[in-house]
Image (cartoon, rainbow, N blue to C red; front, side, top):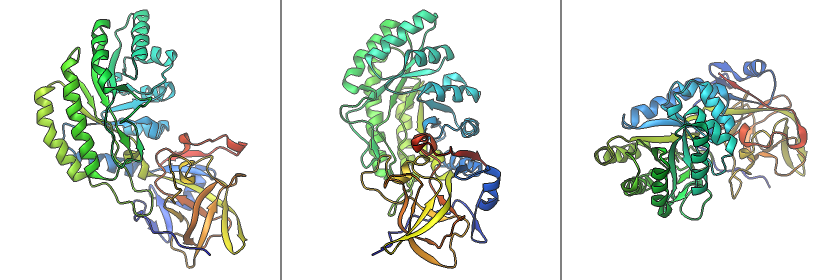
Length: 411
């Protein structure tokens, strides 16, 4: 028997006029023509601007904002955000190329990742960006490559702390991890940086992602600042960058509520005088990805068939997990939960029904919405997945089953 799932936090970021979603002031039905096809992703500049403005208004003015390009590396999105943030953080040579093309000062670009190839390190050194060191071995490779280029590489230490971000969607620290240098090993690495005469910039301490609980972020920030102050005692030169990561989440699933920024901002304000006193040259950086772009994007796919199987209705679309792995539940979810989904060209509709929305792939994993109440849809109608601006197309197996490619538009 069909059952209706719990409701999502209201998705009110896109206006609804005549029961049709509008993105960037354009009706969804018109946007399909502009995109040239379905499926496609659309990202709204206004929402990107508003999110940055919100953070600038709520956070202490001394906090610098960096965009984590891995969240959405579409060149047009990165270019737009580069004009609004203080720096960019990349995780591959491809992302580095996109970041450098924006004209961002290389000194404000950093490179993280546990498996940087010699080619990537060589390019990073040549560009003059900061390399977040993930191991003692990587340190030695960077030093050797810098020597061969006649350059003094800019480096920071990515620290794997002995704590985690509680209630985070994805834990990045707190135990044996491929990411960063264990906190207890960091003092020895700092001494080696001094021996090798590298340009030490500071620390990158990131403990988790996708958190909606302000108290958990406050706890992580407290412990991050305490750790940074201890490690700075052994630093080979004054700390100039203290990247405390991000972890700010957005509501995806039934029961999720938006993050309350106020207490997080107040706690940062509390810490800044002590940081200024003990690390007078340090800029405190928040590295955010999903929180900047996630709510500004939608994924749009078209209903190509409607069928009833043993009493349950399925809407079959021309897009699926090959374009949007996360919505299928196969990108970090333990138990699959529905993203917010609507029929974009008839949001409320005159009739409602409980249906499952599935993609065209020959796998039962290709689910976009499972037993959700939606407006009654027919072939040709447009299914919209909200909260799709981060970890969408670039995080999906686009070549799976060799279906046509998806496109992206920035409106």
